[in-house]
Image (tube, rainbow, N blue to C red; front, side, top):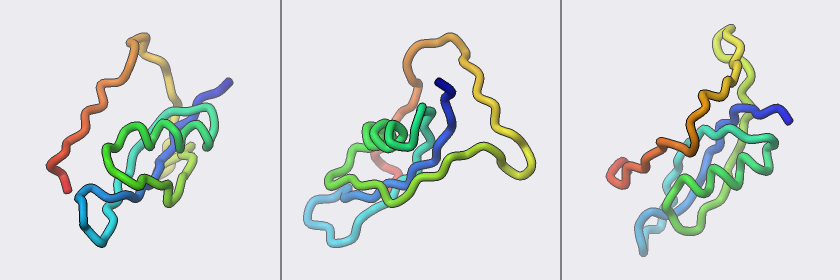
Amino acid sequence: MVKNLYAVLLGGKLRENHLMEDHHLVFVVANSEKEARVKAKRKWQASEIHVDGTQLIKKVDGFIINLEEDGSQGSSFKINPNYS
């Protein structure tokens, strides 16, 4: 199955007793939009996480996105808890 790049906009609460929700845009590689939503939620440590939107990304500013596996295992993604 072909893997694609997805941008997923997440909403959720970072602080207890905070009325407003925060948002986080994550990029994931997945086989489907459904899988992309699940993977994106795992990348954010917030409560009441929900998906506000997803976008399959095939081309940016006239450049075609071509995913190529680099052979390494896992992800080097790190969450910065101080960004918001």
